[in-house]
Length: 209
Image (cartoon, rainbow, N blue to C red; front, side):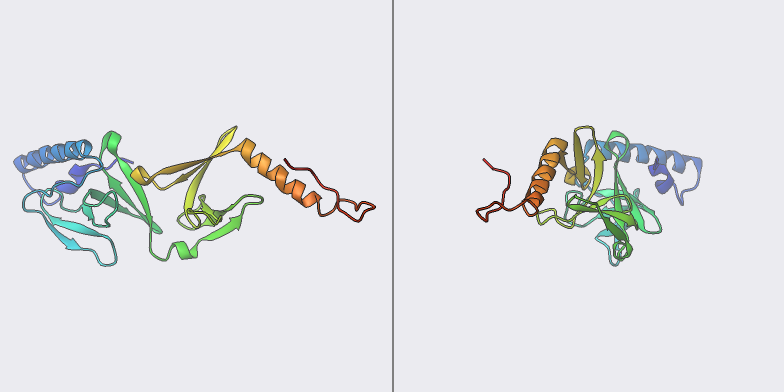
């Protein structure tokens, strides 16, 4: 999906000279975004913003970035400008351009409450089967990532659990050999409950180092 800053900046301008100037401004702004990826951009002179109720960003209502939004959340993207694309269940916040382009998917408030999940047999996570995060998974362990959603990527020898995006992106590697070993240990533990009793009255079971 391509987003052209000129679509935002040229709105409301009239005349060939004005349009040409707007295009040049767009190119300059796009280059600035690329050069300062990950940093807050300095607001252009004369820019005016207004609060967007219920959201941690403001809307630019005048100036060369008119129609864009500014992140005010306090996270790593705080102060950065983005284009907002609205959807039925979630919005897309599009930062930067070209190789520095980053798209953040933001579910609407209340949309997550409507999603349904299904346990994944033998795994410490559940699959999201409906809602704006459909196809992702929820960590159901008791570790520091409990309750967080992630994208599951399966490889021949390992699985990748991908949390977040951009600078907040974190990849957890789950090696199949480690997972299979855990499964074997779990099965071995179950076997001890059904093993035959010895004449001494004890219970036979696997030896451990």
